Length: 116
Ligand code: 5GP
Picture 1 (tube, rainbow, N blue to C red):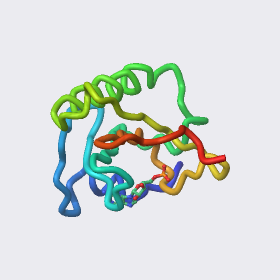
Picture 2: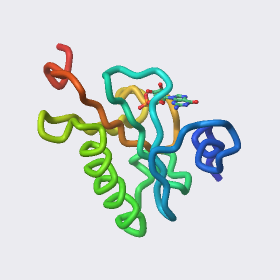
Picture 3: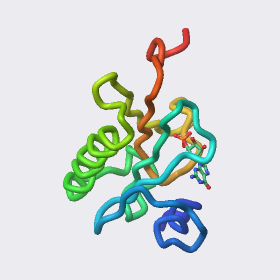
Picture 4: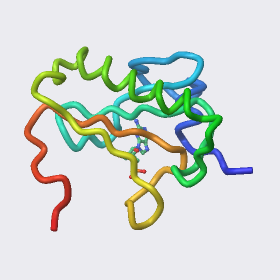
């Protein structure tokens, strides 16, 4: 059984966080340490620690995450200029919170995909 993270408490609204979106599958809220003018995290309501733990039964949830990202990008006014969606996985991916989350980043030119 994977250990819960702070994101489970946010999803259950046990700690004060402004939710931008929530339904039966996913929740979205602003990143506490934004790396861009718009930096939103979209997470599944169930705990999936890493992308390595994704199974076919999660396909609906993962699809919903993308649909919600698109909707929030419109609401943030960043859809036309563009934005980036990121999943980090494990150590080399730079994952810090072991409850999968999609980063939605935009509001300025984001530069190259990777610093090399
Ligand atoms: P990762 O590096 O795992 O892909 O990203 C984790 C993200 O979660 C980071 O961008 C970090 O700022 C954000 N984060 C960590 N703890 C909290 C929190 O308690 N609240 C919110 N809103 N974001 C958090």
